[in-house]
Length: 110
Image (cartoon, rainbow, N blue to C red; front, side, top):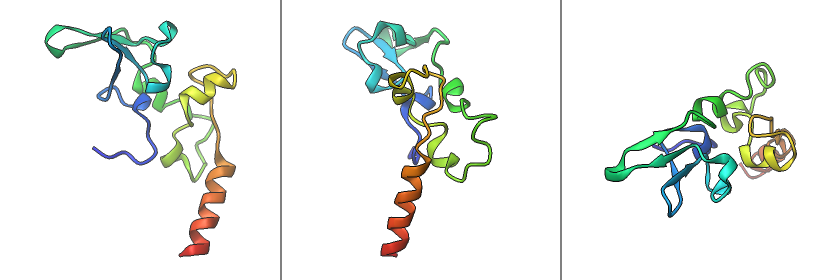
């Protein structure tokens, strides 16, 4: 299924697995034991530990971005960038200005 703007971190049905079978929220967290969200078991079953779930990641924006016109594409931003900026996995990674510039460019060429 195609999801415009929504990262694998926001969807539990999509998984990122390392060579040891550890499951991560997204590719950027691979190899960091802090962000393991489960394990791929024998025969393809996935055992999630309920940490860093897609549902939690999808809902970080509630109460903060409710009126943002870019919410359907952004969903609170990138979980990895939020961590890099010291806001933690559940912080907001607002890129509103970037989205506004992209819209200006699109309008210029359309």
